Length: 243
Length: 313
Ligand SMILES: Cc1cc2nc3c(=O)[nH]c(=O)nc-3n(C[C@H](O)[C@H](O)[C@H](O)COP(=O)(O)OP(=O)(O)OC[C@H]3O[C@@H](n4cnc5c(N)ncnc54)[C@H](O)[C@@H]3O)c2cc1C
Image 1 (cartoon, chains in turn brown, red):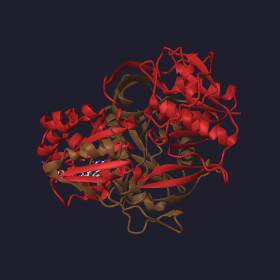
Image 2 (cartoon, protein in one colour; image 1 turned 30 degrees about the horizontal axis):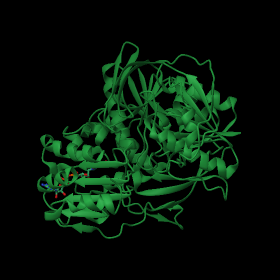
Image 3 (cartoon, rainbow over the protein chains, first blue to last red; image 1 turned 180 degrees about the vertical axis):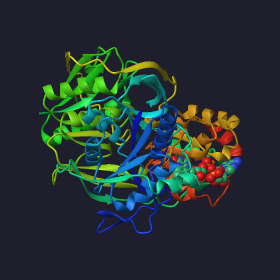
Image 4 (spheres, each protein chain N blue to C red; image 1 turned 90 degrees about the horizontal axis):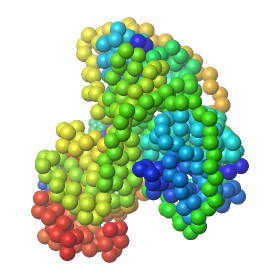
């Protein structure tokens, strides 16, 4: 069983988002970067399935050299090897097209449900289409049994259970598993695990990020006396007219 | 060249987000002088009502096999090619997001998900999309001739000024799906959180799952969906599908009532685009009050019964 897990590297969730150069560039100053939380779940579940089925886990990341600590983290969780495709990950289509070039020959490919920076939620489906294999997004359970994968996935307003034979690509949603925390042995071993660097080659870029903006600041809060809490209902009905 | 909308449905009914997507497409159609064609890949036979929202024609492709990302995408992409789609609009739902990327590859298009506004055509084709889980917006230029847009529910108003339109049936030969659907469990009688216009949400301040009956009652009285903070779903007090925030669902309702939620940055990321925010918290220093329009400082266990009785009167 060969499993490929695609990871993105994103600003820590506590980051206050700001932009520079006339709002055209995300301001990385002082920002701590982490493995995308959903991708950690994908790595963990991939390792569990590989361990139970005598398989291997390869990590792939499209990004520059500064994301190597995050790649090493995935290796320290237990992945066997990693590939870094050297480029600025400009958008989901670029990332998927780059990954597709190295993604042949895996039984299972996992991504996160979305990366918490650009929230595209698209890499799973893009890879599925590029490789002409099924894509199954937002999965909360993956089991493997003699050639078939079974999934639980979130659908709008409920859940669905599916079966599909590999090769396929799926995206990890919360509840899939608890993220594995690397231990000291894993951290030591990760230092010498193979990390291959490949140069990017996609040139026909589908989208360009031009600029950014921040949500308008809220005015100050109007407080309603707790004793007279029912007044809130009156305001929502007659002033805001929302209920 | 037309604008094609995927008419998403659930339980044999078109979804509200489909009406939004068609209204959205109609607005672009008017700007660009293109007609809007809705594509209904389901078992719904009567689809003429989609004309009200701006479709000039609906193509019905009878499908009783349910939605699978591979086969439904193949059918939809083939129809888009047949009618020469230049823009494809879907809802940014789980269905839409499993479809849109596959369609974008089939049509060699540019893809944008999480889109929240009508494109700006003054310098190419620029869309505004939500990024950093609600903490910011990005303006993105789509370079390829064909564009696939997934629009966020509740970001575009429904416009029902039109009238019923013509419908046509089409049939498409697609390969059978490699995916077998074993079971579908929909929560019935509940509004899906991602589409809800009103949301009542509660946090660790509610002390335990046994206290959620008050939250449920308030929500059902105003017709709202229920949501929760991350620790609440982590502890299993509520299902994870209710978890909103940076690592949960991002929502954009007209009203968000947060009860016993502190207002951590990761929580606010997912809810701060709500139009009106109400915070109820016993701690006057709770960060949520800085992001709320209305606030009540006090004990939720005393305030909730007051709200419920005010609604019942
Ligand atoms: C990587 C990462 C990702 C995260 N992602 C998310 C996310 O997506 N969504 C999310 O919600 N959180 C997320 N968090 C967690 C976030 O940082 C907060 O810990 C969490 O939002 C707090 O939840 P809470 O407000 O319910 O609980 P608490 O912080 O415990 O707050 C409870 C609040 O209830 C109030 N209260 C207590 N009793 C009462 C009462 N009787 N009446 C009224 N008020 C009362 C208290 O004053 C307090 O403000 C994330 C954290 C990390 C590290």
